[in-house]
Image: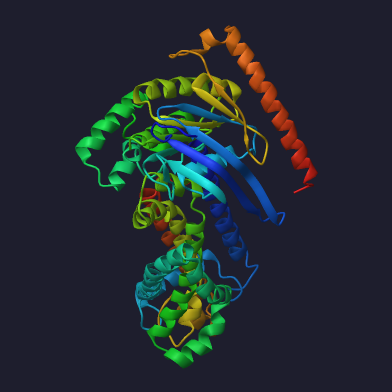
Length: 257
Length: 274
């Protein structure tokens, strides 16, 4: 615990040093605002955007729009990806059918899919949703399938020797066994899904953090770009912290078995 | 074999078991023409060098694996699959980490529609016998290695199996804990009198625990010696160690098992680098 506190302290000091260095570079006039606006300028910009919004949408509106797009896609990806991944892990034939598609699509840069998604699904919210969903879903599927295959043979044998039926074996032994890995998989997937947000908001959006960054860059507003980047990073970090907390409460035995 | 009494509790008739060795691309014969009959209420130790196929025998009786040739019978009926009439304890405790000690112990009856009044009182009995009182609400990861294994034994025993199969259950424990666990196991067994097949490579453990020690040859595993252990129960190491018969028996078994180990090691070397 003492070491845990010390680690937090070291991390905080590192962040403070980075911000201080950034401030000094800015106040010495070593760079231009276009190249690297100093933190003070970004604070001013934040105040302006909080007051006036950006392009007729308040700042919190951009955050909420992006969060809503991402969370709907994450929820759908977890709800569909977990069962499909578990089925792939349980049934080798099902795995053999889906695996080539999953393995082909998963490493594909999702930006490359934008033209196709627009042709097939238009430029509305559905296309944005699909890009984030696809990135998240594929990662969830792969990790859920791998989780089933990594359940210890001995644990399954112990349960079989106690007379469990195949259904109960899945419900009461395999499912709880894969829970820790499922959480980790969903966490990794959400990290990947969040990075797809920019790609999704490149499609004819007029709000959202990703769109704000792209739009501000075409007006050379580096301060707004950087504010957008900071908000994207902070929101992603907050999402991950939330998941880690839920994971700790839901699977307290994780890593101890 | 023209016995008029009831069939033996467990019977293996000319059992062979071979596996596909994927690494070497050929068949490995783990057990060949192995025959053994275990009588009701008997405590039998299968003793042999590592890789002699003693765990394979146990897995066949448990129903996890099926013989390539021959028959494996329980009460004269062929064994087709694992079931609660054969309790199994592994070298690793294999507990369910999301369940408490009590829920781990009662897992079998709960999965098979047992009545709570019945399995809770049975669990209370095994918790006392196994020295787990006060730990009912603990999780497996809060227990020591020896305690985890006691939970595993209670979990296997509570279904009141016809036979209890133990596969080197104390192999991962330290020497002192192992002695305590051996004494505890025998104490509970003397009350329950379940038929036990206990796999081990530890000569002293086998002689201390068993009514009968079956010594296996190196792979392919065959029965080499079938020894009746003459010591009265309850036994304890302090009385056994100075006993001349114990010393002689131990010497004989050590000698025999050493021959097999040498054979096994030269076999392994002959097969070339893996």
